[in-house]
Length: 494
Ligand SMILES: Cc1cc2nc3c(=O)[nH]c(=O)nc-3n(C[C@H](O)[C@H](O)[C@H](O)COP(=O)(O)OP(=O)(O)OC[C@H]3O[C@@H](n4cnc5c(N)ncnc54)[C@H](O)[C@@H]3O)c2cc1C
Image 1 (cartoon, rainbow, N blue to C red):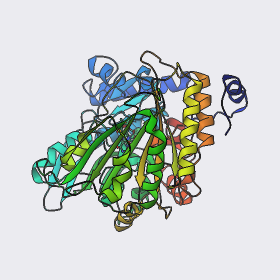
Image 2 (image 1 turned 180 degrees about the horizontal axis):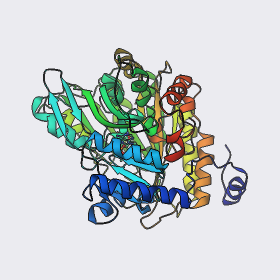
Image 3 (image 1 turned 120 degrees about the horizontal axis):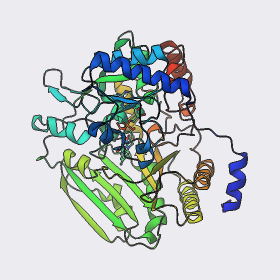
Image 4 (image 1 turned 180 degrees about the vertical axis):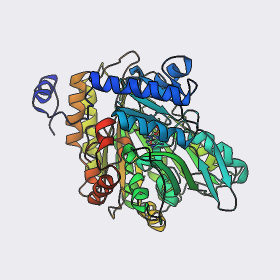
């Protein structure tokens, strides 16, 4: 294994190509945004288009990652209807302004949900959720957070495939989306029945699996913010029972740092061997302070009365420092993690690994090595392991393809999550360079797609999708002038 030092990093910084997307900001783009804001203020009014004030501050400074909360948009548009988004995009397109879109504000990728010298479209005022018992679908507006959406339909005994933390927003769907029930029902995006979409020109279309925009429908399920702005999601409800129906069992187990290797091995084996779609798991190993008694956390659930030892035995037998296990509802397990804490700079990086102990251990050791190279720069450095069993893809197949694409093998998405100390507003260059080296040392297992919601902005995620060519073709069809990639920050590679 190659070890990092600050010296090798400064060399790397010198030779490494800069892969991240940077929009060029100059007088022209500032002027364009100012023109759009003036035009929209006149058309939509100052309650919808704001250039300052308490709501403006709350939105621009309220992103999950501190790094994105320092940007000051030229104005923020708070649409109430799809037609407001149409008008906004038409003006942005006409004046060639830069722009960004914000839903739940959890993306830590710099500039993916925030902007300087540009227009920010915030869905903070489009947050409704409704259930139609006839079609058995839940319609959500893009500004809702999953905890609120689930609470809104709970009385009907149904829920939605959202995320595993209540504060996350609907941007999750556009990257794919992993719920604790995904092994049963598929990627959260697979639960979309229909979407209303505003294209870069301001044109409004409705996309579903069978209409003339089926190609766009597929591309949006994994294509992140590149294919249009979604103003309505109609989702197939999942029949979970209410929050009083404790038909799951599980909870959280906390382990000392000395458990890391055993947990890494247990995770690899779980990924390789567990095929039961009723099982849900996420493993979080923290490589800062390896001697802590509460270094590692595992969330484990089973849609049944207990945790079957044949599935969770390894995790249950590793010595732990505390455990809270009980009967729970789907609502409970999806709200156990809030994810709402703010105030720190955050960074994600992605890999995808098949269930092989050697791959997991090598990846874990690389992260430990990276973390120990920067002992004072990070307050947490997590390896987060999420299983993607083949049952998840079987559920996808039943609904029609998404953009990510079944690689034909069980694997785990790997999220390297760095948390910087409060008050650090800029990522230190050598830490950033070290992180890119870490990502090159821990590549995806051959043939596996990366998960765009967990990637570093420098990672070419779309090129890892088995049907990347179809995604490129659809992008060229819906945005032939390449306006989106040139005017908003998001995944690279299209
Ligand atoms: C604490 C935490 C927990 C997480 N847990 C999970 C989990 O359990 N499962 C999982 O799959 N992922 C999880 N994630 C990752 C999460 O899916 C992504 O961060 C996701 O992008 C967040 O969506 P958002 O709406 O909250 O964020 P935002 O930053 O607002 O949006 C994310 C991206 O989507 C774009 N976007 C949002 N809405 C629209 C729209 N309507 N039209 C066009 N573009 C849009 C934004 O411009 C941005 O680029 C977690 C992240 C965090 C920080």
